Image (cartoon, rainbow, N blue to C red):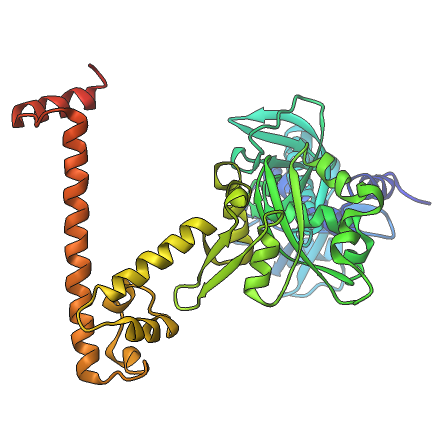
Length: 449
């Protein structure tokens, strides 16, 4: 026949999801604490669960001796024979205690221990459930707000959506349903802390993975995501199967797949582009829909100069520089976008600066230009070893050319500073006195006229 205790253990294990051994250990510890509360720390007590009887047993152990020095842990041979006739000196005699005598205070202590152990067990279960779920998207309900953070009810536990992981334009109220990315799971003494995010770039990629079967199957891969939460994202994709268009797979029939992601992100714009192993082509894809005329790659500085038609400049740069900024994050290259007119003018000015150097004619300027030295500034920053590669150049000429270029660029910098000063003076109409300057600076710092 199943005892009441066994029935209770089974019920709690089912409801709380706690392992049976963990609950039994908690019960044994609770009864041990109750016994200590009743009899004090001097007694030698042993507590164990009897599965057959369905009860927690408490045994008091005493050593059989000739002369008793401590009644708590020793028993005389004469008294031991009354309990067990075969007892001998040196034996450890165990006597089963009546747990009903522990009293109300001891029972309350036992209850506290059980509740504490159950909470600890539940915390460990929650942590074990979530520790391997980093990177997943989870659904929850907004429970409350705590100093800018949103506390989300996940059912068995709560999670935190910190203020820095929230999209600025989004707002929630208590009871709203919310989807978020599991950013981190940490274990603390008070329990696990589950940190959520709606701003992480991986939130976007995981949403696409849930919507696009080709991604979850590994046919289409997401290489990189660049994101400005709440405004715009760029996602670079590629396909392992030549017959599968990665961009088309992510967009879906009539744009249903990408629209499902956009809807979850509350209207955030998403640019899906094709990844290319060639950095220049990848940049061209990343700056779409702008048309690219020319890409100049600087491997040493990991940067690129992007030339676009004059009427495409604002499109390539984007509102407040967003398009080029996201393309730079997506590709990992520093980008400088310029118009075709400005680029051609810069080439002309650079070529003129080469001709302005002492000892440089049109042929020498063309040879330098063909080797990648397109201005006096390029020469000033070059090494002798680099210039020797130019046709007709030797070490002596290279050193002299570098010196002339450095002198030329310095003179030009001085001229530029003087021009700026003259412009400022003409705009002010007069040269202010030193006292006026000091007073002006003080007023400017105070924000007063």
